Structures are given as structure tokens and as C-alpha cells.
Image 1 (cartoon, rainbow, N blue to C red):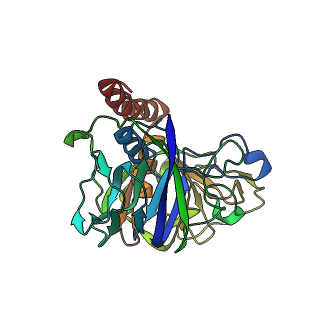
Image 2 (cartoon, rainbow, N blue to C red):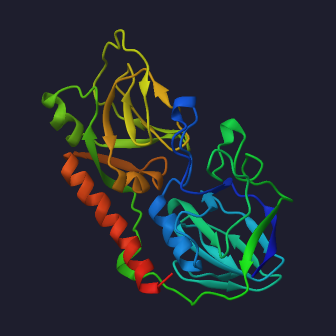
Amino acid sequence: MSFIGKILVESPGLHTTIQDIGRNGFRRFGVPQSGVMDEYSARLANLLVGNNPDMQLLEISFTGPGLVFHEVAVIGLTGADISANLNRKPMAMYETVFVKKGDELSFGKLKSGCRAYLSIGGGLIADYVMESCSTYSPGKFGGYQGRSLKKGDWLFYHHLKNNPAKVKVPEHLIPVFENKQIIRVLRGPEWVGEEYKDLLEDNTFIVGKDTDRMGMRLEGRFLESFEKGGMVSSPLAPGVIQMVPSGELIISMKDGQTTGGYPRVASIISADLGTVAQLRPGDEINFKLVDNQEAKTLFLHLQKKVDYLYSQIGW
């Protein structure tokens, strides 16, 4: 048995949306995957409250919202450290938190990363469009009325009467978000040639200000310039790195367009996409080329971390 709980949004934060694991199979219609930018952190948040790992939750970007709980709730917070406070006292991350009716959750200074994930035990009630509750703001569908939260919105959730056991993520499984990252990539369909391998790996790229859920522009040229020629539009997916005529690189993210007309010189491996999603403007990236086997091994290793935690808890 469950009942419906509700939460008042007193302040929205910079960009707070409802996201799940995303919608697959609709790129042929021009609809991107969307979904949580950092899948590992989101799954940890759902683990803390007994939810399915892919269930919808709040993705909080850069600055957090102010929320007032009008019913009891079980919550979990992971990802970026945005100085969460429950009733004006510091709230722990990466562990189950039991909230009482009337409790207020607020956020302060961004300390590390840039995207936090707030799960609600039982799951948020959201618009289900094309097999997903993920918000796609450019298309104005999914999540909460197809947009980020606003002051005065009400969030509703299914709250289970039987609370789950209190869980804490072991320290060694908590991700660390640093402002300098080595990001592993695969050669893309339009890889420029092995003679440029050292140039890609030795350069340091800076995350530019033009960074959002659609894409991330990097400052620092891979090549001085190149001729685009007559390349036709080709499929894009999250993590694909395109090179524009100036020689600069752009990373496609979860809400990014489904096709593009620039060379796809590389692609970020799945295991590192969440790390990239937590980078802020001014942070530094160094790339490292890997092969398909190493990319697969790293992905399976990350997945096993989540599977291990769920098996230990028994949910």
C-alpha cells in the first residue's frame, strides 16, 4: 500500500528537472535520449531509498532548490556537493535520510561537481512520454510539464508506508569530482589519423561557458583549422566529440541533437560520461585513447559497483 505525498517548491534552483535513465529508440524521429547526465550518481541515489535504479528523480544543476515536504518521505542525495541543509542543518549525502512533515530542504554553496541527484522513496509522479519520464526542455515534454521547476510548483510522489532500512554508500564507491580529469575516448568514425593521436592526448582542453544538457564546448584547438568539405549529416549520440571548422571540439550531451554535420573525431566511453557531466566551466580535460575492449571492461566494472550494492541490500 502507498499514499501520495507532496512537496512545495519554494525556490527552483538554476535548473532542476525530473529525469530517469532516458528514452531510447526515438533518435530516428529527432528525439534525443535525455535522462540523467550522471547515471552512476543517479542510481546510487535510487539505491538509498529502495527504488528501481532507473527510476525518475530530481537532477539539480549548479544551484539547488528550496523544498518543503508536506508529508513524510525517504530521500537520498548524491552527485555534486551543493551544501544541502535539512531544516538549516547540514544533511548527509550518500545515505538514507528520513524526512518529517514540514521539513525544509535547501542548498548553499557548490563545492564539487555540478549536478546532484535527489531521490524520493516510492518515486516522483511525472509525465510519461515516449517510454520515459525524462524532461526534454527544448521539446517541452516529459518530467514536470516539460520544463524545469518553478517557484510554487507542487511535486507529488508515491510514498511507501513501510520505510526501507537506512543505507550508507561505502566511501570507496563514492565518486570524486575534480576540476582536472583524464577522460577516455574511442576513435570516432571520422578520426583524423594516428599522426594526430599525440596531439589529442597531449593537449589540455578547458570546459567553456557554452555548456549545458545539450552540449559542451571545449576551449583549446585540437587542430588550427580544417576544411569541412562536403560531409553530410550523420548520427550523433551522447559522448560524441565533433570538430568544428575552427578546430575546436564540441561534446554532445544527453539533450543534444540527433544528427550533425561535423567530423566525429572521437567518442567518450560510457564509463566516463558521468564524470564529464560533472565538469564545470573552467575545468580541465585531458583525453586518453583506448580500444573497444578496455571501454567495455570499464563499463562493466562501473555497472558491477551498482549491482554489488543492490545485492548487499537485497532490494
